Amino acid sequence: MIIRNLKDILGTASEVRAPNGNWESRRLLTRDDNMGFSMNDTIIKAGSVNHLWYKNHLEAVYCISGNGQIEDLATGIIHQIEPGVLYALDKNDKHILRGGTADMRMVCVFYPALRGDEVHDEDGSYPPPDKG
Ligand code: 9YT
Image: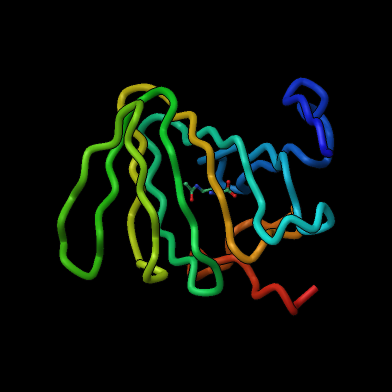
């Protein structure tokens, strides 16, 4: 059994910050935990604009607090995000995630699991699991 506490992750290498300052991702479960998926407790900064395309991963995101929007770039449809809303990128969907008026706190699950130190590349993706 694995037991983790967010407070033990804060301030360590498992607290990953976007180079552009748009998000902070606390990597609770990573590839080395051998669960097949990984889990982050992520803060998306209010007002931030994030062009994302997880072409190498599926991601499910559940909002706990704050507000924002996700734009599906295949359809142009914009969905509002508030506490209780989940979105799942089941088609490796290209999207824009916009922070709203208050920082969003989100639980993010990635399959396959993240290594734990990833930040986005120029496409807004993380490298495939076999790289690095
Ligand atoms: C929701 C989302 O994709 N945010 C960007 C950061 C990423 N999910 C992460 O690594 O926590």
